[in-house]
Length: 169
Ligand SMILES: Cc1cc2nc3c(=O)[nH]c(=O)nc-3n(C[C@H](O)[C@H](O)[C@H](O)COP(=O)(O)O)c2cc1C
Image (cartoon, rainbow, N blue to C red; front, side, top):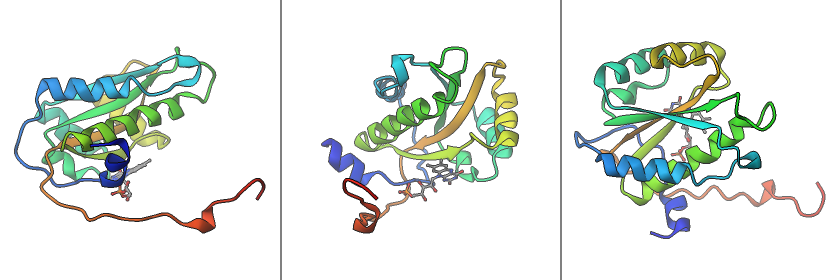
C-alpha cells in the first residue's frame, strides 16, 4: 500500500477479532514509530507494549472512553521521558508524530487501531501512570488500542477548501 492509500484508509477501529498480532508485527509498528521526526532529533519517546489482559482491563477502567480495550489484542502506550525533551513543551508533538506513524503502519499491515487520548487530562495521566508503574519523568501521551478489525469503515473525504489560506489569512 502506498502512503497516501494508508492515509486514506486509516480510520479509528473499535471492534476487534480474536486474533493475535505477532511480536514481529508489533516490532514493525515500533520501528515505524521511532522513524518519526522529533524536535532536535531527541527521540524522547518511550513505548509500553501491553498484552496482558489484566493490565488491558486496568487501563480500560482508568480511561473513560476505552471500552474497546476489552477486545483489543494489545495496546501501545506512547510516553515521553521529559528529562530528554529538547525544550519544555516539545514532547507532545514528538509523541503525536510517532503515534501517527504507528496508526499508518498498522493500516498498511491490515491492523486496526484507535488513538485514546491521555495527555493533557491530568487525572487520566495520573491513573494511567499508576497502572503502568511509570516513573515520575515518564509522561503518558496516549494509548493506542490494536487488533485485527472486526468492523469496516467507509472512506471519508474531509477536505474543506474553506480551511485553507494562501499567503496570508
Ligand atoms: C487526541 C485524540 C484523542 C482521542 N481519544 C479517543 C478516545 O479516548 N476514545 C476513542 O474511542 N477515540 C479517541 N480518538 C479517536 C477520534 O475519536 C477519531 O480519530 C475521530 O473521531 C476521527 O475518526 P477517524 O479516526 O476514524 O478518522 C482520539 C483521537 C485523538 C487525535
